[in-house]
Length: 408
Image: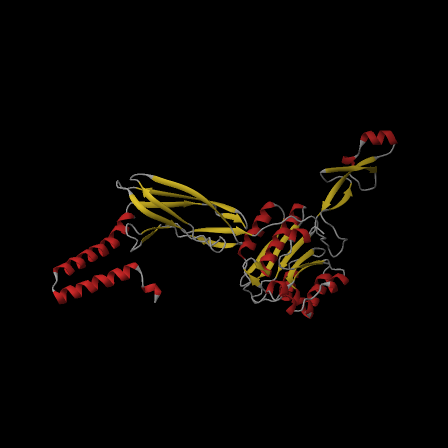
């Protein structure tokens, strides 16, 4: 009922009322009141539209950002007509911002003819994801505020990709199925064939004569060869749970959002240390970033993680089984999943399958109870069984400082 009691509807009702009273009573004064109200009603509809004639707007902003970043948004409003324009509102739609700040608005009291007004503001990206910004719109209620005219700026809807937040990891026990834990790159020595000098040693059969160290050979009266350091990297495969029932929580505080941050950060840690990294997860569509190294690989992984959703039908154990077919023997699998799966025999089978392939699993277990908001009412499953089996594990609860957890 309240939404019908607008100034426009009340004015329209009074106009009709005065018309019928004047027509019934034939009183000239009431006809005059009717004419005045009718003129006011017409002007209230015409002038706002006139106020937007010749006014155009444009917006500038980046196409990518990280979660938590402040995005600079620039707005230009131009009046191409000779006459000035008054009471113009510039309204935008920025769904990437936090709730309550998704419709920024600026009011321009007067815009002179042939003039341009420019301004800028910052909005914080609330949550990673793929967004459509806009449309940018101009509105006016000039001069009475009874009726509002709106003009959308054509072509003002643009994409914005918000990457997940990445936190620093101090150390990570990347474990291959055939090696001891390592926090970075394994080093070995070889006579020749690398970039970094390691030392010298006696000549062995099969060493290349190209790498003989002649000063040492002359000093020791026997062949001495230069020894170099070679670097052996491990293949890291990251798997997160995208089953449609796996996401628990609201807003940014969900199991999926934490899993995505962990996946992005562990990928960066591994790539920074020279490892090969691939991302494998199964939502409604497969999300597979084949194994590669370098900054460009990190960019591909970030883009994929910005878009993933928990909308799949593949259970996490099935996802691990399918991902294992893409892993090389002796690699590492970083698995991020909710703690309810610790009771699953299927997950035990998947972990044993990885071990049989000499693939070392590293498990990040998300405490579902803390994300559901029911606290102690739900049973929390401990990853002690994983630790007892020699599988490095991390337990993550809602509100946990991820940086601190991965610094231990």
